[in-house]
Amino acid sequence: MQWQEEAIILGVKRHGETSVIAEVMTPSRGRHLGLVRSGRSRSMQPVLQAGNRVDVLWRARLHDHLGEFRIEPLQLRAAQLMETATAVYGVQAMGALLRLLPERDPHPHLYQALDIILDNLHDPVDAGELFVRFELAVLNDLGFGLDLTECAATGLRTDLIYVSPKTGRAVCRTAGAPYAERMLSLPAFLSEGQSKAADPESLAAAFRLTAHFLNRHVYDPRGLNENAARDGFVQAALKALEGRAMPGKGAEGRGITSALDKAL
Image (cartoon, rainbow, N blue to C red; front, side, top):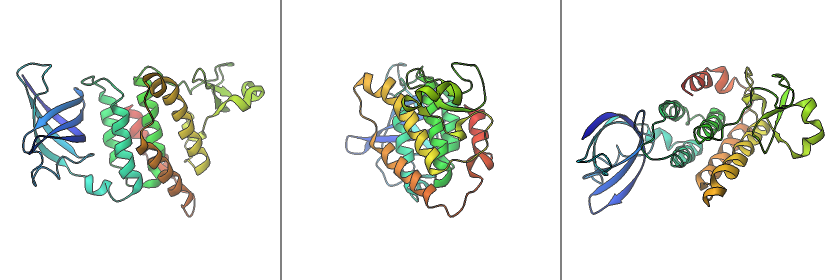
């Protein structure tokens, strides 16, 4: 059996003296593992870096076997991903999120989103907004999607400033006011139709929002700890926003989130 398509490297593990087991994300095969012979060679090590986009040929005798990869480079962006803290932590954190999904389970929209975000992780100002949207998409694919489009109590689609920590549904200002201390904040940049870029306060609120539901529905039930790379990414993204000299258009203004939303 065999198949061939493009993929993004998520990571590798040493196997024997010269080989590695590579973990990749593909559009139609999902997260997939395969043996790369001579994967530790000088020619292959630069190719098998997390974040690189590659062409993968997989072969195995049976479908449920590990199989072997033959890998050719398509876009080597690992060097660029080493230039900023948000990129270094971000590529690791997104790989950890994808490992929450079943192996070989196709999620083509997540592949497209991953590809878009990796091209923009080097910009620390945009990275935080894009990463939060990726977390929301993974939650949705795990069956725990948030409904941020209308008020759970009134059905209104305006003035949504809260999220119920139990249901994951948006709540408008009026309906949520009596319970404000128990509510999670809904950052304006995540509201439907908003073009406002994130600031440090709203981005921190977004990270708290996704962390709450990841812990509640995924990490705690599985007995897992939150990936350490996420903490590093959160701190780096907030620091980058705090250090911005003056407000800019952000990812939304430059059309990046529009492309991401189309992918998702």
